[in-house]
Image 1 (tube, rainbow, N blue to C red):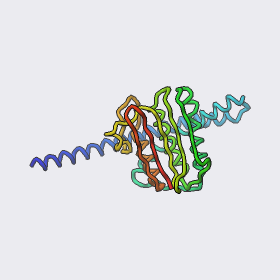
Image 2: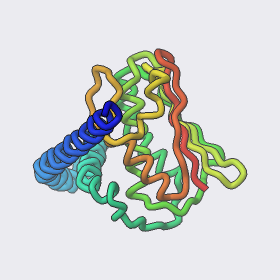
Image 3: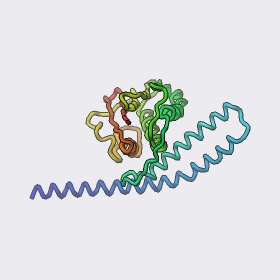
Image 4: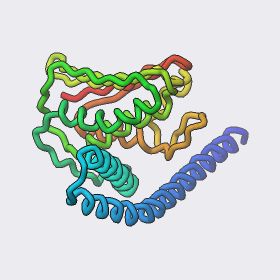
Length: 239
C-alpha cells in the first residue's frame, strides 16, 4: 500500500509539473505576440531614420539600436517557435557560413554594454575563418543566448572571453566568464526546460534548453563547467 501511494504521488506531481509547463508556454506565447508588433514598428521607424543624411556617429548609434531591436525580435520568434522545438517540428535550413564572422558580428553588439559595465570582454578565433554548414538563424540564437547569459551573471570589473577554434575537424566554442558560477548540484539541470538558477536575475528558463536542441540538431553537443563563486564556461562542439 505504501508503494502504491508513493507511485500515485509521483504520478500526480509529474502531471502537475506538465500542466504548469503548459501554462507557462501559453503565457510566453501570448506575451510574445504582444511584444512583436511594437518591436516591428520600432524597426520600421529606425529604417526610416537611417535613410536620412545623418552624422556618422549618430548613424552608427542608430544602427546598433536597430541591430539590438532585431535581436529582441529574434528572441520573440524563439519563444513563438518553442513549441515547434519541443515537438521536433523545426526544419534546419543549412548553408555554408563563415561561423567566425557571424560570431564576431554578434560579439560586437555587446561591446558597448561591456564598456559601460567595465567588463573585460574579449574574442579569440583560430583560425580567423571557419566555414560550417549551419542554419544561420538558429545558430545566431545559440550565440546570442550564451553571451546574454554570460553578461547576466557577470558583475562589473569581471571578465567574459569568447574562444573559437578548430581541432581535428571539430569546431569548439567556449564562452567563459568569472561571474557567479553554478552550484555543482545544479549543473546537470541548466539545460532542462523552464529550469532557472536561483538568483536575483530572472529569466524564462527556456534559453539553454533551446540552445541544446539547436546544437544537437546540428550534430553537436554542449556542456557546462563551473565553480560556484568563480565563474562558468559553456562549451559546445560541431563537426
